[in-house]
Image (cartoon, rainbow, N blue to C red; front, side, top):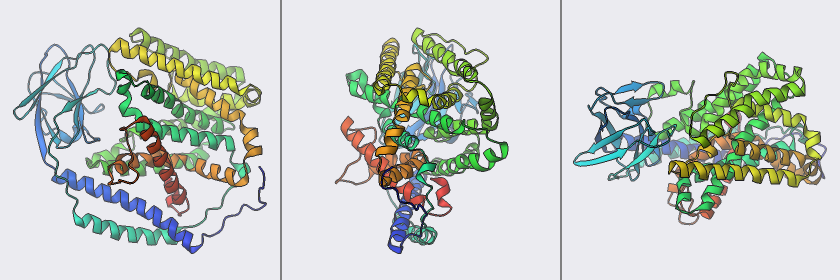
Length: 532
């Protein structure tokens, strides 16, 4: 890198910078706590509707999965005061009808309300009674949806009241947090540029931004059935990002064996601490929380986008075994393992979805596709010298091939099932997504020498710093997606899964940059840097 200073040591921030750093981070946490208080106050005071759910087909299944009010998911754990003869599945958190007795559900009033049931070829029909209004939904469809299908309910009147005391408490909390953060603010000692590989941070930044774009466009996916091809292409494009993150982890962690002590002391806490912290924050933000939900955080994600961290935790726990085995076998044996763990089950999955049949994976397939993608990252890193010699247009062509594969597969299954079907987009182990992820990984890796030579010290340092907080961005960006678009913001209105594609893309950039700024400043505060 050019113009690289000889010294890289850190120094204490000047007082104005310390104040600015503490102010921004304190404002963020005060903002989060204010929204938690608002949501809990709304949950406590908001009027509720009582609805009765009846199964109308005794010979078929009717399974209730939960409800959603203005973007807030409500689990059956929290809104079923009387289940009658319906059977509760604790593992899946669902109620299934056994006869025609009603399931009583309480649902808060809101502008957008849905109720979710299992759908598929074995499901029946259901009657929903809301006072004098009666709704009927046909749950019998050609293909099953893994997490059920939401059905719209009439909107309820909402009386939004924000107690002035919440503002007062937010100001007090901000002042306390600001003082604490100001004293704890410091310039962390930066590692030398050589300690962080530029290509890895560039790829992390690309994938992180694309994941924010994914979360800001995924809920309007069904618009492609109305002729909005751009929405289909954007959703398909974003599918490479998550598998790419697995591959980055594999490329870095499979270079050497990792001991049990090192893994448990150094690796695992870096995932567990922020995952549990932000998991608690999202539970509180939901406004629908019980004590048991915090206990569940130890075993399974309670916030949808945090599933990746639980999967990564599983891989980290296996790391002492996996890394030792990986470093002791030949490349041919590694490729053999990749075929067993990733290639074969991927072909089985894609084939079964295209044919509309269910085919079980062979018994040798474990932890698919996560572990296989992790292994793929290690193998591609091992082949880096060969990959760098390949023309870069080849990786671009392969990416387009993967994009086309996922797009055509999505169009086909959507027409076959007569519904906007994200089967191939959502499955990180589908062939098209893997091709996109692998080609993007190889393209950025092949640019390593170019990046090292052309990036100035300032640019490289900025890339390294942002790359180091991409996990923090992953944790907090959903907070902004759910709150900033509701802010009275007439200057720069932000969109979350609404508006035109251009508006959603520009809003994604804003969400990403805001999250990056918060995380960079949070990293400069002692103790708090553990959660970003």
